[in-house]
Length: 219
Image (cartoon, rainbow, N blue to C red; front, side, top):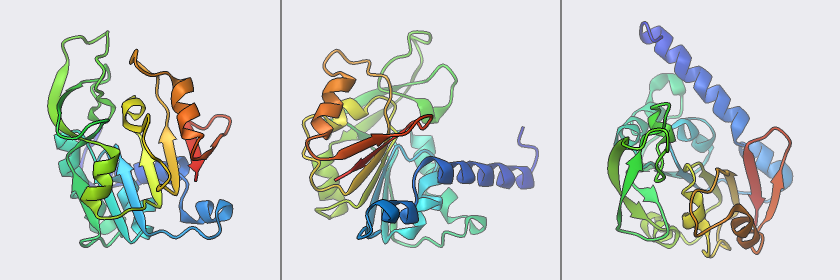
C-alpha cells in the first residue's frame, strides 16, 4: 500500500534494485565482452523507465519503447526524478510504440489477468477474454534503427510479453551487440520457441543460467 510520498520513493527504489539484479549492467557485460562500449541502448518493454533509471544511465543514449500509453508517460518522468540520480537530458527518448514485425499497424493490447499494465500483451488472456486495454501503433526492428538514427545497437533489453516472436523472427540481428531478453510462452501458431532460438543462433551466442528468466545473447 502506497501511503505517502516516502513510501512511494522507497517502493520505486526497491524496484530499481530489482532491475540491477535482473539485467546485466555495463561492468558485467564488459566482463564477458571487454571491448563493449555503452553507447546506444534500446529498451523494448520499458514499463515506467526502470532500465533507463538504473542500467541505462551509463549509456550515451537510451531509446525506450513502451506500448502502454500510461507507462510510456510514466517513463518520461520516473528516470528523471531527482532521487534516482540519473541526470537525464536529451539522451533519453521515450516512444509509445509496440515492437512488432511491421511498422504502422494498429494492434490491440489485452489486459493481463493481474491487471498490471506492464504485463499487457498482444495475445488475449483466455481467463480475461474481454479485457481490451488499448490500441497502439507498431514499429519493426528495421524501422527502430531508422528512428533512432543509428545502424548499430550496443545493448538491447527485451521484455515484450510474447511479442518477441514476431518482432525478432527472420530479422537481421547482426547489428546488435547484445540482447538480454525474457523469453515468454509463444501463443502464435506462426512461430515456436525452437524456431526463434534457431534463428537467433545464426547471429548470436546464447546463454541461459539456472533460475534466471533472462536469455543472454552476444553477437
